[in-house]
Amino acid sequence: YHLFAISIGLQGIYVDREEDVAAAWERALAADRPVLIEFKTDPNVPPLPPHIKLEQAKKFATTLFKGDPDQAGIIVQTAKQVLSSVLPGKK
Image (cartoon, rainbow, N blue to C red):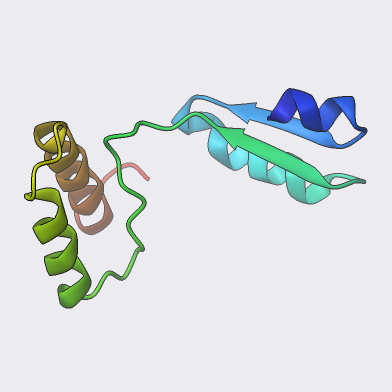
């Protein structure tokens, strides 16, 4: 997608490493034209909101346990995401 954006005169940015996310946003916000940021993401890391409500978490878990073939990986990555947001450490 980012290459297509470049081909039509927009700025295209590709991000495939977590440590490059902040710099990509800085470049995008400082750009003199519209920007498309393409992120390579792990399909086992669900995009959870930072302040998820208990009811939302229950629905997420219920859906997950209905037979997702990657449920073990999703559970591990979700736990890492949740714990990293509540435990002290590197951000």
